[in-house]
Image (cartoon, rainbow, N blue to C red):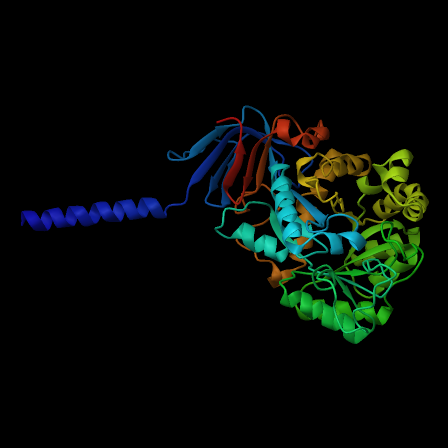
Length: 452
C-alpha cells in the first residue's frame, strides 16, 4: 500500500513538473506608456503581459502573473517593433563589380551580420525585395544560434535586358542567349527576362526558392549604369504576366517605378504596391488612391543626401538622375497624401561590403523624413501597422500566422521595443538605438535588456 502511494506521488510530481515545463514563459512589462501602432496617442500607465511569443494582456489595471519576468518600464514607451519594407540584405557593393569580386560565402556572412544589426536597431521585420534572403530567414528561424528580424523575401528581382537590375558590364553576354547563366547573381539576385514566357519562368523560379511575393523593375533607376530614368521597362503584357504568376500563388507583385508613366502602367496591370514613385502626377496619385495602392517613397535615400555628398557618392550619370528627382519627391508626396494613398516605411539603403548597415542609425532616419508629411504617429504607423498590411497581401505565403504584426494588442506577436522617452514627442530617439532602445523583444524572446 505504501509503495502504491509513493508511486502515485511520484507520478503526480512528474506530471506537475512536466506541466510546468510545458507552460510558456511569461514577461510582464509594467508602468509603460503604449504606442499601439494604430492610435495617435499613448495608452498611459499600462501593463503588458507576454506569454510565449504572443501578447496575452494589455491593461491599465494590474496584471497578476506570479511567475513572470517583470520589466518595470518606469514610464517609458512600449511600441511595436519597426518594419522596414524595402531592404536588400544580400546586396553589397556596386553590383557590376560585387558579382565578380565577392563570393557567395562572403555575401552570406555580410548579409547575416546586417540582419543581426537590423534587429538590434529595432527592426523586427523586414521585406527584402531583391536578393537571396530566404536562406537568411531559414537560418534565423532555425536552431543554429543566428538572430535577426522576420524576413519576407522576393528573391531575385525580375528585370528586362538593359533594365534596372541588369548589372552586367558592357563586355558580358546576356545569359539568355549565350549559353546560360554565368554568374550566381543572375540566378539569386536578378532574373533577366524578356517576354511573357520568361517573366513567368522567373516568377515561378522565385517561388520555388521560397519567395513570399515578387519584385519587378518597370522603369529606370538612379544607381544603375545603363538604363535611363525616363525609360519604360516591361510591357503591360509582361507586367500582367508577373501579376498573374503572383495571383496564382495568392500573393502580389511590388514594382520599382520612378516615372508617372511607369507607375500608371503598373497600377493598371494590378500592382498594389509601388516603390519610389517620385515623378507621379496628381492624376496618377488619384488613380492609386482609388485602387488602394500603397506607396513606399524611400525618402532618406534621396533627400537625406546633400548635393556635395551625392556628387561624391554617385557616378556622374547617377548624380544627374538623383538631381532630377530631388525636388520632385515633395510634390509627389503631397499628391499622394491628397488622394489618400497609404504610405509605407522602407529604406532601400545599401552599404559597401565592409560596412554593416544595420549597426548605424541611417535606417531610422527615414522616420524623420516621413514625419514631415505624416506627423510622428503617422510615420510610426507607416513602419508598423500600415507596413503589416503589406504582409496581409501575401496571403497563405506568410509563414508567421500565429498573431498580428505591427501592433501592441492582445493576440499579436510579441515583437516589442521599450524606448527611453516619448517617441511621439521625439521621433529622433529611434535614430540612436544603442542608447534609447532599452529592451528589444522579437517573438517573445528578449535580445536586449539594459534595465534588468
